[in-house]
Length: 248
Image 1 (cartoon, rainbow, N blue to C red):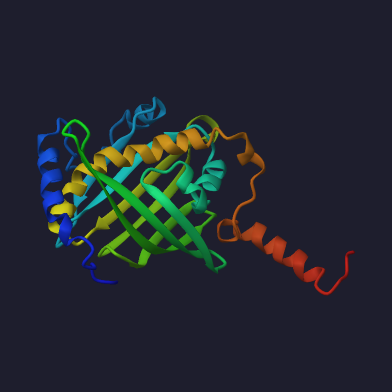
Image 2 (tube, rainbow, N blue to C red; image 1 turned 120 degrees about the vertical axis):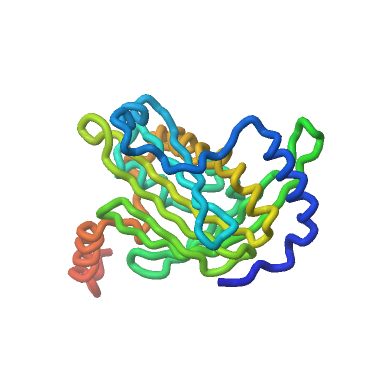
């Protein structure tokens, strides 16, 4: 992992300013796990409730953010949305650049640039702060699971995962779980990230809820790294069968 570069020294005062705003805010980030064992948890998800948490990580100043929500579409459709990373700039919160480089049958390298806006419009002070990361994205299309680790960037570390489960009557909806560890390397900024978790994480769910309404998703082709093994094997067999054959 690359150490935090000297890109943020000027942000110490900004971090303190934003931390002050966070401490004065009416909302607070929950410090307990999402109550998935509650008897009515699934019903609350089906009603549209979004659950978030931001749990401390031992030995780290940062936290593990987590959000769970219901998407009104089956997992295979949601899978098409979350694996098309280059489209994130059009609907995902904070993402301003996104570029994919294939690495293997189920893996790709993902470069993303994000922009945070620190401060408050009410206080007349909003300061944009950008950072970038390069991630190794690992996909298990059979389980609709993605996890990633950091290859480089101007933060200390980030890792996380997506999990999509069939949900609701007939499994026609999706229970989406998104987890994100994010450590900037500046203590003030890492502390302020606790506040950001509660503000940003629900937007992941609401953004995907809107995106799955796109009628074009039904015929959209999956990127190679996200294709299920059986389907990928069939495509490879067809290519091998016609290898060297002129079909013109």
